[in-house]
Length: 240
Ligand SMILES: Nc1ncnc2c1ncn2[C@@H]1O[C@H](COP(=O)(O)OP(=O)(O)OP(=O)(O)O)[C@@H](O)[C@H]1O
Ligand SMILES: [Mg+2]
Image (cartoon, rainbow, N blue to C red; front, side, top):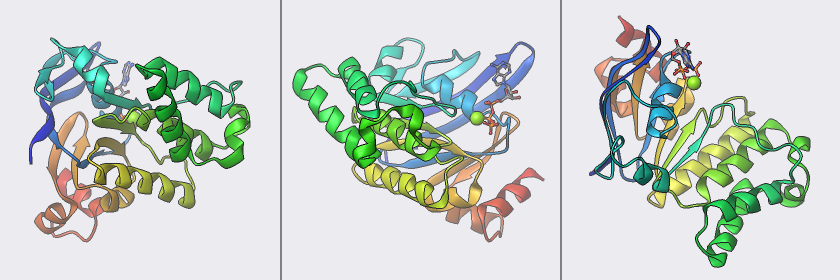
């Protein structure tokens, strides 16, 4: 299948620290691709570079064939990004936040309505959508922000730890939303350190550690290759 995103030899220095030491992977159309690895592995750094929020020190990133350095606007137009520690304006009501964002991204009045409706349906907060975000639980904020990230029908959604800190039910709901949109053609690049959860969510995964990709493939391929019964075991064996 054709790649929508290609990352080659990506490096990122923070001062002297080489957080990414030459990362290679690609994401295909309609695919859920996960970067999995421990704290500090370089997941967020990789995602922020692709979301054009951080400039790379070296390497090549292509989205729909466009180069990140030459055409960053092509990335911004069709990629949406859900940050790891995303907060939303606590004093705004959920619905007003979505309206504000829809007006910011839409090109017509019609589109504003479409975006708001889509986001409200994804967030699925019922009447609480009319209350202030400051009164929401973590799971509710996460779903609101997921609604915001997906309302523009991006080609690629970059989701940094989309289910972290969520309870079983909310995590399940978020995973179902991600799967549903991917089935509709959305490509998803996400990160997680919950390797067991990711096994059931992702078509392919890349194992990342200390700024390097240890291996990549479908969970089935990797489990067979490392003779492991789950991705945690795969990761432990790939580290050796
Ligand atoms: N703004 C920054 N300035 C300096 N160092 C940074 C900065 N951001 C990240 N780092 C360092 O770069 C490395 C990779 O961090 P990154 O946040 O990409 O990891 P991560 O895989 O997302 O980890 P986590 O699972 O904890 O979210 C770490 O050593 C981190 O301390
Ligand atoms: Mg991170």
